[in-house]
Image (tube, rainbow, N blue to C red; front, side):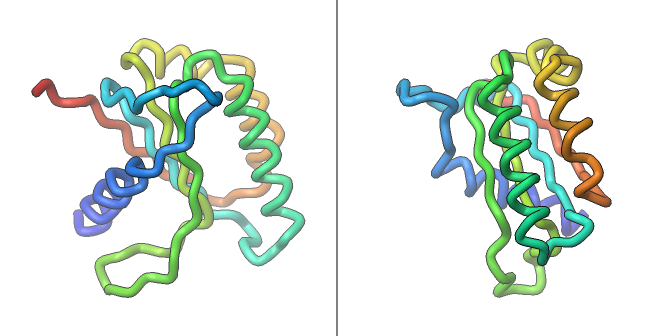
Length: 133
């Protein structure tokens, strides 16, 4: 539970500097947030990191459903409650749970998995529905 709360907090904080798919002024859509943590097989390999980042960027540029996204790496943990064991964090927003479901089977997402899954040994996903204000 402690790791889940830390990861959720990290995800929220990372969205303060959310990357966007295009130069258009997109705002983060809180309707559905998809947070993915990747642990690479060889996190010290410059080549593996380059291959992973290229595959991820190609995927995000081609995705029809992902609205805004953030890709980050962990800073060195300064407190015991912070998990810095992952290699990459991906946060993607969707307009709805249905859009996220479509994303799971879109060609760009499936190609990313096919092209990059040999680079990681663990993936954890946290999805969240936005709360109405």
